[in-house]
Image (tube, rainbow, N blue to C red; front, side, top):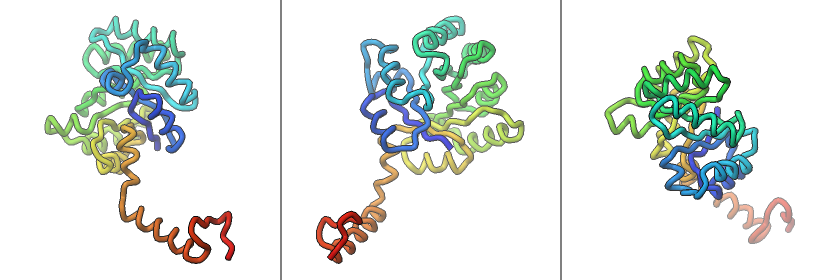
Length: 229
């Protein structure tokens, strides 16, 4: 099971690394614009890499629509950041060509923009390391993301493929929970979604009652470090 944070904001990345068992960081052009808007994209990615180290994965997306330019962009990423970068490539017809070629050249590839099961199957056949499927974008076009997760993960399991299904594009903790329940090995979510897991008032009240009972024995502010009457 892998949990990634979907942001390019350096403070959010530091926070996520500090508080969560984080496996990596993902971003796309819109995420970069909204959460960072850097003057120098590659310099910013290098700062992101410095924060997360090389034990966590870093996923960044190509911009071009044609395969030849996408391949050049992927090589530019590798030149600037090293071959351990995961190049996000949309699963269009041009992108599928790019994925196939990049994998032959030894790149790590995250197939992205997946809304349909056949897109995912094509990306699996091309050898993509991650298949990034977007929950709310599928819901907006009347597709069933959970069924896609089940079908794609079944294909991965049945054929023993090394690819990982990466669920993305969440608007609620419930959607994130469903993705893992449907078999996704990985999921990437905004920091707000990750933090929202802990906004359960029942849990907050329950823990607070423990503290209150403890302090009733040993005084206000007491912890295990100073629990003596």
